[in-house]
Image (cartoon, rainbow, N blue to C red):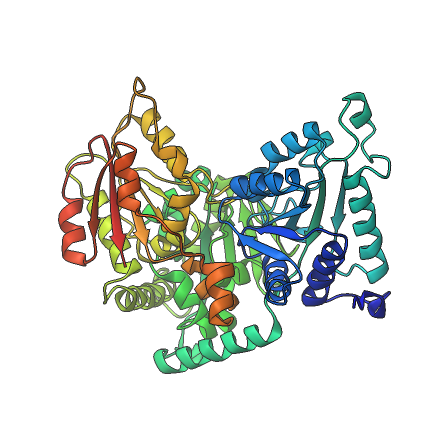
Length: 563
């Protein structure tokens, strides 16, 4: 029995909101659901998994949104109204070809996309774009549902979407009739969710596990005995500021917390393992002793850094052109559009005051602040790489690539891969490092690296996870007459989407976590590569990986690293 009315005129929690949305659509006869795992659509995933267990709908989990969209299209064409569910960002765009087909075929396909709240659009928030209206006139109806929707509003939105999908009410797009589309057709529901994105019991279990781990492994510094200082945080689109600020930041002794694809990662003050120590070892120092944060570009990789750039109790400043920086919490104290002016200000601050009676060198206090970060970061990296695993493999790949006899570029996959390299990458990076951070999707990663290698005309190594590999499997093939680059694809095969294990979802019941988040795939990675004409090799230990990395990158080759 649907109890949605009991919440009329009340704000809905994620669990209620997602559950009611799924139940309302299922009650309208949408029995087949094609779900693509993600973080922002996790509330919908939990609701779907629960209803599928009680056999109230048929649930199908796929990692590729384009394939899932056409599967939903096929089910709809076969007479079973289907819903496609995906997370925010590029995931939504992958549904367009199937939506176009459904529009011209008059098929009642329903697309349900998850999103971040509307207030975060245009702020630089990770995986956030303008999803409402993304399908244009190809959908008969679209609605943008925000957190806090009441039961009556949710019911109304679902009823309008279903009626338009079935062609029993006028389209909300006046141009649709002019295009002579059949009356039934696809519709789009864009549903925004705020954190937390997991059920309360899962969040509590995750917090307990994280707390136990922290108690067992950390030795936090006493903030009363630690220095105070400034941090420079550099993310994507920060390279334009590097030349102007490099020397000033170095002389001021400011630690640099930079993502690995940026020029700032080469800075002598770049700190390894910074996200881990900011969230654990130095968390108390960061909380109490941090005075100023300068943000260059759009840093979006980790929660500890997001917490830093959203603080209201310190001076958070951005540098760079408008549109290249983050402003998630409307807390920016100053926007430096002119990097040289900021450099002059930093240089003045680094000089000793003529009125000072302490007779200390200008670099003494800043250097101790910098060294504290460096030591903590190196200790964190040592702990992460002491055993065979993703971090030690990434360290070997980075070092081998940066010290290769010939220049080799590096392309890093999104999701867990970029975050692992962010932890271990050294600041010796003479070659180019690429990654897709605009919307940080895993789509088309092989194709992106292939294109970059063709354009650069020098060897390229792509490193990403097994889920990203299967997501872009079609990019392995190429025409017989086409030029091929010198491209080595390194697949870190750790058995699925392990990034979710580091989020609250990792504490979900094992069956739920495996099916809805981990999604281990069926398929022989090396065999698939060989079938497409690639050379392929499998390694499962550090020594063999290091040995394989000594070989020059020639033609198309794949290295599967099994963890």
